[in-house]
Image (cartoon, rainbow, N blue to C red):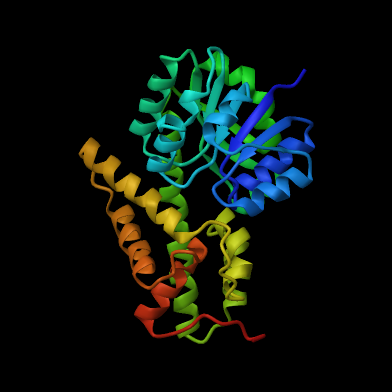
Length: 299
């Protein structure tokens, strides 16, 4: 018999992930700060809860998909948090992207209640969440990882145990470095082409067929040249991830110069009020610096 799963955080990523779990036949208890996504999930078979504590008391396995470290700390360890409703033997999987030390702190606090924990941040954006093709980076115990793997397989295709608690978050930070730099590289290539009068659709076509090809180019390239910046992943969340990377680099005594540049460019997005645009809208910062807009010949 399949476990009852509690799911907290029904945003751009969490809502389609929850829907996929319902479709896979899991009984799902859901909670979210805003009501509308809860109603949508209830319509397809999920059950509603009104606090994190209630979710924990009605579930055997809990998943959270939240914006940042303080959100996870509050939901997991706060006064009305999961820790007040969990039972010995429960499992807690945090699939948010947060600071590795916070993942370890939460796992240690939950262990005192007899709850086993995994940190399992994801990559793949809204499309991966909808299609169940996310890359999932997991930190925690190997036996627990194998035990819950069937649940991960509903949500993703590339599922990797990275090490102990916190390791999943560390690998996600590495992922976010690469994605940010790919987005910036694509933006600079398109701006250069636009300044020289080359149709950006041609630039994307040529680069997608050569050594410059990337998943970022494949998924965001066709959208960016049509100036579609509705969020698959909001830039303010990627900026938050770059803050985590910045703090990790400082903690380890590392110099990550390209990541520092990415941090500044994504910070400029926030200053412009573009925090709720897709992270590919970093193009607009490069455009401002160059005094040109990337537009296809079709427009």
